[in-house]
Image (cartoon, rainbow over the protein chains, first blue to last red):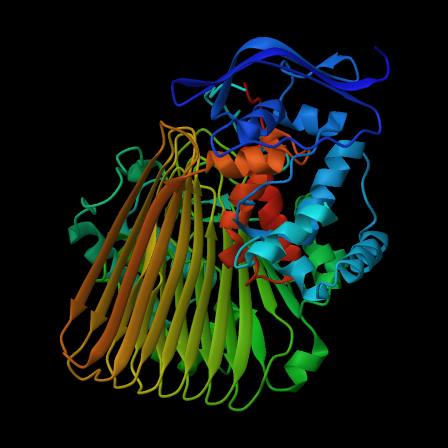
Length: 158
Length: 470
C-alpha cells in the first residue's frame, strides 16, 4: 500500500443538492499518469474540485488520502501544501495582486521561509522565458485581462 | 471546507498606542470663552488681524449649529476639550539633536527620522499643537521654496501672503468646526513654491496628538505658483485615550496656472478620535490637483476634500481608500466643483468595512453652466468583509449644462469565495488569502503612494485583517 500515492474510497459528493459522485473508488500509484475520461456531467471536475476542497462541493461519504494521510479533514491550503495541485479550467481573476507577489506569498507560506526578492525575480524570469511569456506578466494583476491561454500559462509557472 | 463565518480579531494597535506621561508646561481651561481665545492669541504673539479673526470666528462658532446630517458626534463634549497644549520644547528646533528625548523617541517609533533619511525633502513634525522639529533640505530652500511652520511665517516676510489666503477657501462661516478652527487653530505647515519651480522629492509632515482631551487644530496652507510642481504628504497617527479626542484641522491649497500639486494623506487616528477635517483646493487655468487619501483610524470621520476647478482646462483627481472596523463610522468622499470650460475630474474610491464598521462614500459633483465641454467621472467600490458590516454610497451630482460628459459607477460586494478558494489551492492560508484580496482591492491608492507609504498602508491592512479565522 505504501506505493499508493492517492487513494479514493467510496467517495460521495453532492453539489447544488444533487449527488454527483456515488461511491467512487480510485487508486493512483507513485509515478503514474492517469487520464479520466467521460461525457459532460460525468463528474470529472467534481472529483478534482472535491479532492482540492472547493466549498461548492460537499463530500457526503467515503474517504480520500494522499501518501496515506487523510485529505478530507484538511483545509484547502493544507491540501495544497501536502502536494495536491489543481489546475483550474478557468483561473479566477484577482485584481490588485501581481502574479509575482502571489507566487512569492504562496511559496513562502508553503515553505515557511522568507524569500529573497532578487533571487526570486531571477527565477521567475527564467521560468517565464521557458514558457515564452513576456516578463511584464509578472507585474500584471493575477489573471486579470489574460486570455484563456495566458491564464493557463501561469498555472504551469506556479 | 464548510462555509463558516469568518471572525477577525480586533486590531493590534500596540505599535501605535504608546504614549508618554503628559507633562506639558501650559494648558488652557476646558471650554471656550473669548478670554481663552485671547490668551491663545497672546501666547502665540499673533498679529492684530489674526487676534480679531480668532475672536470673530469664536462668535460664528457659538451661533452655528452642530452638523446633523452625518454620523453622530454626540460623544463629543466640547466643554471638555482642551484646545491648546504646548509641548515641552522651545518652538522650532531645526536640529534633530535639540528635540527633547521623549518626543524624539515617540517620533523614532513612528519612523520619522528614517523617513527623512529616505530622501524626503523635509520633516515638519507636529507634537501636540506646536512644531518642534522642522527641517528643509538646502537644495529645496535654494530654489526659493518656503516650507516652514505657519505661525512663524505669519510674523515673517510671508505674513501678507498668508493674510491674503488664510481661511479664504474655507471661511469660518463654512460650518461649526471651521469656525472653531478659525478661533483656536494652532500649528501647521506653510509651503510656498514659486513660479516654475519643480520640487522633485515629496515634502512630508507628520501630525500627532498626545495629550488627553486635547484637540488638534493645525492649519496647512500651500501655494503653488504658475507652472510649479509639488508633492506634499501628510501622515497622521495618534495614541489611544479614553477621553473623546477631536481633530478639526484645515487644509487650503492654491494651485496656480499650469501648476501641479499632489496632496497625499494616510490618516490613522486612534479609535476614539472625532476627525472633522476640512480640506479644499482652488485650481487655476490648466492647473492640476491630485488627492490621494487613505482613512483608517478614528471613531467618526467627516472628510470630503473639495476641489474648485476655477480656471479653464484645469483638472482634479481624487483617489481614496477608507477602512472602517469595529466601532468606526467613517463618512468620507469628496466634492468637485466645475466652474470653467473644459475642466476634468476623476474620482476613484474604495471602501472596506469589517466587524460592524460603517463606511459611507459621500460625494458631490457640481458642474456650473459656464463649465461647457467638461468631463466628470465618479467610480466607487465597496467591500464588506462580513455580514455585520455596513457600506453606503451617496453620490450627488448637479449638472447645469447639457454640454458635459458625466459618468458614474458604483459597486458593492463581498470577498469572492472562488478567489479565496483559488488562492488557498496554491497553499496560501485563508487568512492570508483574504488579506491579499483586500490589499489588492485597495491597490488604487497604494500604487499612487511613494514606496514606504505604500508598504505602511499594506501593513496597516494586514494588521486590520489579521486574527483568528474559524
